[in-house]
Length: 508
Ligand SMILES: Nc1nc2c(ncn2[C@@H]2O[C@H](COP(=O)(O)OP(=O)(O)OP(=O)(O)O)[C@@H](O)[C@H]2O)c(=O)[nH]1
Ligand SMILES: [Mg+2]
Image (cartoon, rainbow, N blue to C red):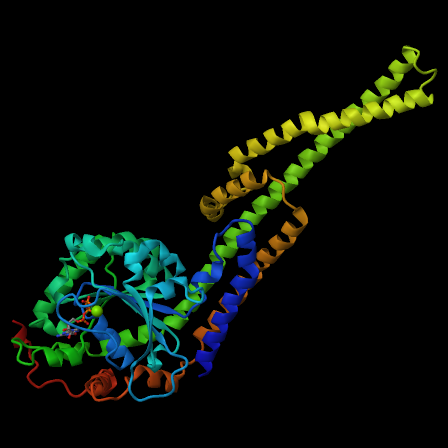
């Protein structure tokens, strides 16, 4: 329990750091249009995507220990379903859906992080929903089941941009499981486009786990290797990398048992891959820890960028003030000179006897005031505007971009600085900005260091074995009793002896 509590407390602290330290400043200066914490404040998220009928819903049901999602051979489910824990649910033996919410509610409730999906329109909203389930598996995370990827012709009929939705969800997710099955390891174009153009472009590689599911349907080891090879080739094309990403090879023993026990071929190879299902389950249960890593990167990235953003505003404001001071000084000197000249003129033209004559003094002061007012509202204003215009054209030179990181950050920060300078004409209070800059700078330096220290502590912490065992074990009920036995067998240390007739002859 200790580790679990530690992870939860740390997550809340990090969200608080963003909400109280970064978000108000980000909103005030137009660094962000929405509160920064809006996408990270909810629970850790696991997104499950893949070809239709690749076994996504079956896998999820198995994790949850109950028949929560519909399964079926043809494309079965055309909805995006957020499956989350029902905190109000009492302990019950049977895992079931305790509450359902529709997409409209979900997209408009600020407690959830899905407001960014509103842009996908009504058709999408009607294919979006939430299910609350009393499964302990969901205590610290939520799962998103998605409609299967189809071929690109059918894809057009959806009425919303499927790939964009997947891309947005992938950005929110801490872990993305991408499922394939032996029948479609290399055929569904849509899957490839989605992966190449959305998931891999928008998330970090370490957030994605590739899964070759339903491997019990390979007739032999060589058949499996052939499928595996095809998938590797396709994935290398998708990711554009030469090294092949790790692929989990797995299957549902429950579904396999139901599908056809008299399938031809030898399935001895499955014996060696049984522990993969358990590993997959463990990876999913590790999502809260992944969320911490993602939050740490989020804080580092945004505090660094915001720091640079405020540094630029502060530097520019100081430079503006310096220039303004110079101009005011010049104006004052010119006005003084004008006042003196007028007093002198008054003496020459006989309007006053001497320079100290009250008339000469009055004329001098009037000329000085008029001169200063003319300077401030005339030439000085024009020059200040020209100054602002000049700097808006060369925002890149406001602060030094001496390192590659600063240059990279500037790519996203520079246009925002420009927008803010244009909006305010370079006039904003420097004192509050200084305090805000100090606050953000502290998060950027101290805050990020503290977070990393806490994560290192966590890495050295032993897992809460009792809790983990409890969650990772499916709840026993009639339907899922066979899933349990598969799981018990999936621990390599407890495997039953391999089949006696295991020789490679069957793989010929
Ligand atoms: N043999 C075998 N069948 C499986 C396995 N996993 C799922 N199935 C079967 O495959 C079919 C499709 O499974 P689903 O879980 O509905 O697949 P899905 O990916 O959710 O499908 P869509 O929601 O339509 O995209 C069902 O009939 C399952 O019983 C497996 O590991 N082995
Ligand atoms: Mg499904």
